[in-house]
Amino acid sequence: MENNNFGQVKISNDVIATIAGLAAIEVEGVGTTSTFTDKLLKNNGVKIQIEEDEVILDVMIIIDYGISIPDIAFKVQENVKNTVETMTGLKVSQVNIHVQGINFKKEKVEKAEAK
Image (tube, rainbow, N blue to C red; front, side, top):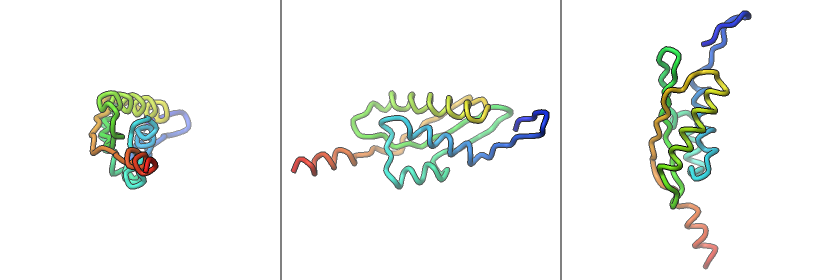
């Protein structure tokens, strides 16, 4: 919550979670199957804790097959932190990434096209 000369600005946790979810799926290599994206953006995939003026985020993601998990996790952490801080003005102290699975969809499509 932020005070200014005109009054208070309150940002809902759902808004923060949606911003974090969108920032996570912007990163190339994060699986974007429709069921996973729906889950992430409906805030089941992002958990938020606000302690004093700092935000701790837990983001659940699926990684595309063949991608380096540590590299993608770092990029997601960076993008989520920067996006949430820029859009909300809040300080993000932690972005914890939970890899929930591997997306094999592209590989299956390529094999089907090869036949």
